Length: 302
Image (cartoon, rainbow, N blue to C red; front, side, top):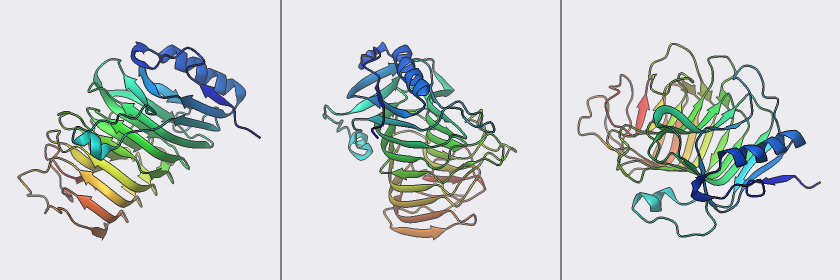
């Protein structure tokens, strides 16, 4: 049985990077929801949106009534190359670009779980355009595969895995060859946030247990070193997450009072909450306590 594909350009999206394609993408997604399953497909192009692209309608506790969704593009660039100014010239790149309001909690794409079988999210770029705070938020999502996804130029968190404080955390998702990059100074931005208060990315020490656990990151490429006070990974409330192969880079601080840097090294380490790194190159890592104004490769809030 072939899987129905809902091409956003068939529903009017232009993909020229300027035209607001929000309503046309919404039409394509609505058709997918009406069908009951399928692939939301973005052909090569830059699709400007002015409001969050929501996949699923779960609340974090109430399951999504939209299920069996895949989001595919035609390709994504390399974070490592873009970080040194070598923008991809490939005509087969698909990008969702934010042109909406600026703010720390403005989100480009959000997956609202719990959701049954969001099969994959692949071959696509998400661009915060130096104004959206968050590129991609996974809310109480489990069992999804992300492959060849690049998130760029967000001001707070490029990739955020969290829940709404219930027992339904974001868990058992697999991320393969995914990247984060800034093309200019985006300030105290973060590559990956694990856990934390789902409604406010700026809250570092929430008492709510909004968890991310048992997620796997393979071949992650996080390049934020050109952003002042940037952090590669921020561990807020998480357990059992594994990073295997790749590079995580923040803007390494000169003050290392909370921990020693690990530079240009191959690392195998298991931390106190069974959080593992293997075969990684880090600019720095830091255990608690933490000064939120510090810049590190990994921030740990315990």
